[in-house]
Picture (cartoon, rainbow, N blue to C red):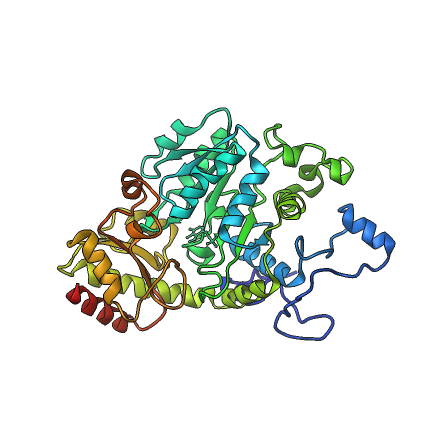
Length: 428
Ligand SMILES: Cc1ncc(COP(=O)(O)O)c(C=O)c1O
């Protein structure tokens, strides 16, 4: 008997999780813009509330439009289940909320989006959660940062803003030895360029605001459960291993097996903390995901052409793009992202801080704003904007020194983007 072939990435990007609407036959996934869902009868209502049956109660917890997005991203990342939430930061927060109790620690890469560094350093302190920082260029710093209260390791696959490729497989081994889950923020790579679960990650988070949605029009976040971590191995993760009083003593890790983490985030995190994704945004992001493979290839091809051009420009001191053969992360890029190294990278101007400000002022086709992962090309000077709150030393560590410009290359014609950069560099 022939086996059903596993669909390819582009097929999953268009079809996973979706079918014609059973009520109307609508081919595109409808926007179920409703807060709540009518129960079949009283027994149905009771079984939904007791987690004995899967179904919709209230859009803060589940919604059919969001469910298609969740199933699709889980399929693309190779996970067992996923959760759509209001933003990338909400995805990170719900993930840590399920893993950490007051007094716990987690190890975080120093090469992260500046907003994540802030979130971890300041807001998370209010919950009694402490980040211990480690440098992905020095793997021994991850080992050194692990202590008895460490409950997770957090890294970005391609780090924002510097074009750093992190050795996920090596860090996954460290996480396994420490018996903690490895969380990978895969926002800049997307599963088209790299699938962290294949290299040993246990949880993947996304700011879907970026390349998954891809058009700069909707905020969203996704958490993917890799289904790989044994939550019952010891008592370190009580949300999954202890009886839950609100569900008649149910132990989520026992009842839901390899998708228990996603369930815990939904029935405890989303239910109680509330950062639900709006069905309209789920629809917009889902529509974006359908063209993810086409866009990511074009983003990466354009970025490589522009990085090559800038690396030969006299006003540019250095370019940090792992797709360039001379780049320090090129070997890691060849291993982890053979199709391309993504759209986001940084370069340094010989003219320093002032030249950075002048460049963003003179660009015409590039938009000066604080986002990445749009069809349009975007530019920002991190030291005066996204990373402004960090100390000078933290700025440099995070790859956001005074001379640094970050670009997110769009899907326009590369020749037009190069011409725009050339005229702005000449003017600055
Ligand atoms: C890598 C990364 N992770 C997380 C976030 C936070 O996502 P959001 O803005 O959707 O909350 C961002 C935002 O820029 C990001 O670049």
